[in-house]
Length: 547
Image (cartoon, rainbow, N blue to C red; front, side, top):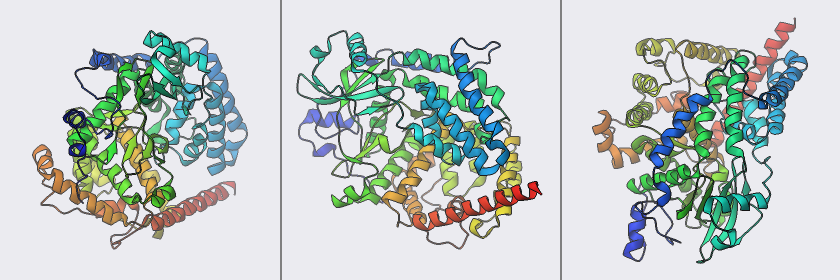
């Protein structure tokens, strides 16, 4: 796979070249980024440490319920659970899970921005959370009404210390996007630059912290009482949620994440991805002014193709840059979804919204690198050790015992050829064994898996006919050629001398050892067949229980 072109040398003027040397930005800068001339970055490391230290305090186990907000939350969630218990629970199976998901979604919707945000995170966790919960919570993605513009004005003027008209020549009072934490308005500076202004919702910081305290109090009472995925139990989910959302409440941290992601893209020579420049001065805890970039919607594959954009190359660039950031630099965008991605007319991808960013310290980054390389080479022991070092398994776990218990060295099976009963029993046994090893989902691993699932789903729209096994081999060859020396030096594995072993990939896709090629269209048909088998097994189980 050829390296992405380095566009820094294509920009006229030495100052602009210097700007692109520190980040993967656009070629036509509205202003230039000098990392040493950003007053909002003063003390940013201390801010990040304070935010991280706040999470254990917010999620600690309490003896007494935390205040009046507790009553409203308990009432809304209690009604949802009681309605499910009296109606859908008796039906069992899909109807029970769907009924619970619908009632929880309505409860979350009534409770406002914090719970809507939690639902939105769950909705992008296909493969992590139950399918019924994910499908239902997708309804929450566009359910946050915008704050009145006068409240937006007050926050901007308070944080920037000036009247709105002194900062902007024009601000569109209608937001282009309204989310749970903030909303975004188009604007133009007096100097002529077109920008977007991200403004935090009034009072949201106080509400979020209060809601996390309530969630932390309620979560232990829900363990074992509702059918949620075993590895995403309520207390663990609240802890993960707190770790992500508290950091989103200070836009200086988001602006720094924009620069950090842009910098690692530049270090990797990855110019197929573009990050908007945050303004050198107009960034505060509640206001973030940034460069305005436009492009095709991520889902508009037809429009891209009509413009001559090779959508399979767009997707490949996204996958490669995401893996480079996580494995080699320990920094990656942690919330990939269609609303956070645009594609410019030249085929470059614009990344938006850096409120959730994955960050791995050096020890965990190396563990993560070993995890991905172990998967590439089908080295199951390396994968288990890496999961242990990432905190997904207990630190004293017996690696050999895990490999044996989970039958990780078995040849890949074709799941379509297995019976529904065999599939169900296998998954039930796998979950049971994972829980016995203290398996959990650390924040960065959850963000990585969530992003991978999103990119996997994007194949259906952007590259439905591409051979998935061939793409894995091509991406592996790219990393061996471009980063093989560094990988060998860091973890002692020379991927240049060891060809990719696709058996591990075949296992993850659920295809047999003899499969040489499979497109996403074919894989989707196989997954549909698997779902049908599961539903038949559940129906048969309910019928047998009734008799």
